Length: 464
Image 1 (cartoon, rainbow, N blue to C red):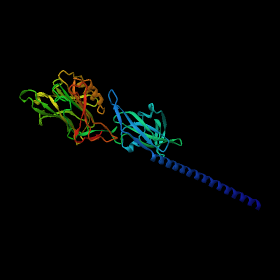
Image 2 (image 1 turned 120 degrees about the horizontal axis):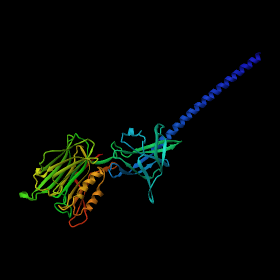
Image 3 (image 1 turned 90 degrees about the horizontal axis):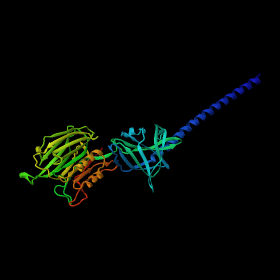
Image 4 (image 1 turned 135 degrees about the vertical axis):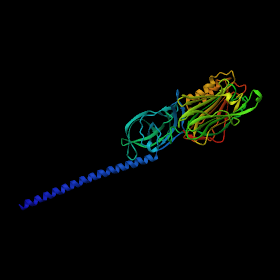
């Protein structure tokens, strides 16, 4: 009995030792597994974070043009270059509403941009093949950004591509650089086309120097810009602040009286358009003296774009006719000031100077024009085509080629057209001096000549 009791005690002890060893081995296995996963996770994060710090974007100056018929969309193009330690990079491109960077960081692609990536080949630019990513996307430190279902492109690192997209002016383009690691998608880096809070990032004029005109070589003096048959001045402007009292434009003409006892006498006639107390006003002065009752043209909305044109001349209007349109081309108001109210016998003459905007940050001007008829026998079609083209194409569209074509087809119909284009991409600073381009018919020529008018003083700009 004593022997059996000792054996039983030994067996129980052996069982306890075995159980203890088994438990310890299990705990050690769990411990090893846990810290192995932790080490693996930390190692993966370190690797991905290291990659993300080495990814770089370079994006070129913006190129864009309007898309007919309403020009509410724009085609934009960039040269894009991505440097990454990985051999390939996956890009996702999408449109977004401008937001502060801390909000854009978490913005997911809700819809694909109407965009494509192209690579330069000997046969020209070749479109890259896209594919769809329908998966969760994580930040380099493993935080879930969200699920996406988006078009993507694989590109080679350190290679230049062309990114083209169709976009509204109040959108930006967001670009993600993704990397697939261990079966998961990670966003290594991201950027967007305009590091601001207002759309594509275009500079527009806020304040100009004075553009002073003089007869170009071969011009038909003194009537190459304004003459009795007809002239029109127009511009696109945006209301930055309705609280400021500030100049929009000041167009000054040197007119020559052609009748009565004042024949041959010069007068400086100024058309002064300005913002005051939330309204748009016009004053007309002759030799510095106010000749009209201060006229309100339109109550203005802050942040809205407007198109203004002023026409006059025997074939157009006996006096000044002022029209103002909304950004969607709706005529908001039309005001006529008869010539008899101004007590001027004639408006024959030439353009003296033009000044745009003020330093008070009240308005922004994207483009402007002056066009004049050739003679009383001129047809009005090309004359009105200038204004209609600038209105129809919208505030950002570059109408240089359009207006040149109108002039080319308007021999013996138009004297001259002057065009100012003040839109400049955000990615580079605009030059301090942007000239107006003037097309005119030199005496005896059947094709228009070209000259430039530079401002006296520097222009300044604001982001639109």
